[in-house]
Length: 212
Image 1 (cartoon, rainbow, N blue to C red):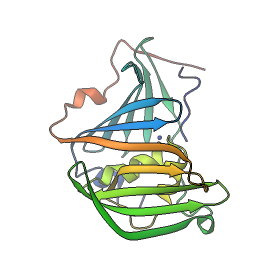
Image 2: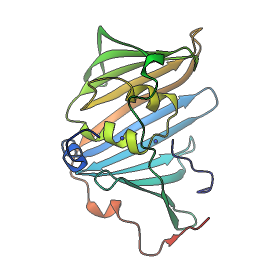
Image 3: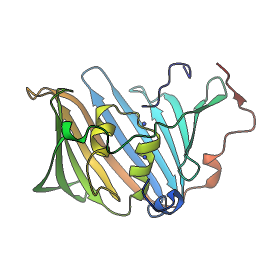
């Protein structure tokens, strides 16, 4: 499974370890497509992020451990007790900006208790328009994480082209093609501000390193 895992899953002038400060806790995200549903749990503490992915049957598929300050990403396979270091994506914000039409609208609505603002991004070449409903509550980790681990296709790429996004988190993301057919939906269903134990960001000692 690790062979098939691709990073395509977030740097400003300030150090990354400062950007990782702010929110600490657990975030649940539900990803829905026409074909399936997945659940993600983000665990955030200081400059570390862990992402656990579960399928629609609540089976743990894989985990990522991300060090924002060192720009390192490790994929863990719990079934086989192996891990592999992955290359960060190093997304370039300035890449082909002219192909993206970005509109920060005045539309607002409350989603899961958070006041959200609508941002829309369109790219005709990719036949997609994405609406992000974002909130700002010290989520500095998110942009840094997406630049390092860009794993949700257009949703990651489009978001990273938006200016002045530091500290914002999309609570609802909806991707449609240009004839308005919905392709993907991401919803943050729960945010817990709480202390996270540091040991969950450590690769277990009984895991072996995977070699291609």
